[in-house]
Image (cartoon, rainbow, N blue to C red; front, top):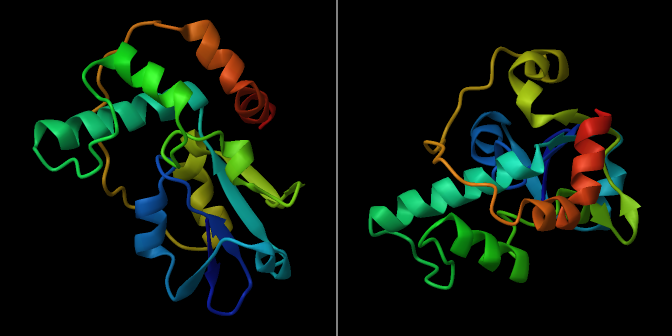
Length: 166
């Protein structure tokens, strides 16, 4: 999904676990777009997160919701890291989908600019002409093992390649 500024001058990708809540809270007057009309905006900025870091963030986020008793989607398995990895590799959810898939519309990679999510603090002012991006909705990162590491690397291979190219 994308947020497009009121004057259509910039669009910002808002993928879950890539700062989407923080971006949405400070982006200003905008509209949500998730179709080919995104190509009417000339400047389209995407934040690409290390896929393993993003998966761990999703696990930590949903585990925290489950521990608080507020996890609404009971189909998400967060018993432990191995169970979550098995679930994530077998199901589709925007919180752990392949980023390259989410940013491609009708076979066309939509961003005109892409940056590492890990660099968002240093790049935000350059891109938006405004101060630092305040963080919202961050979860404490839980420790994990290298369970199915090779499968994770294979599944997210395009995301790893994109992230490493930035």
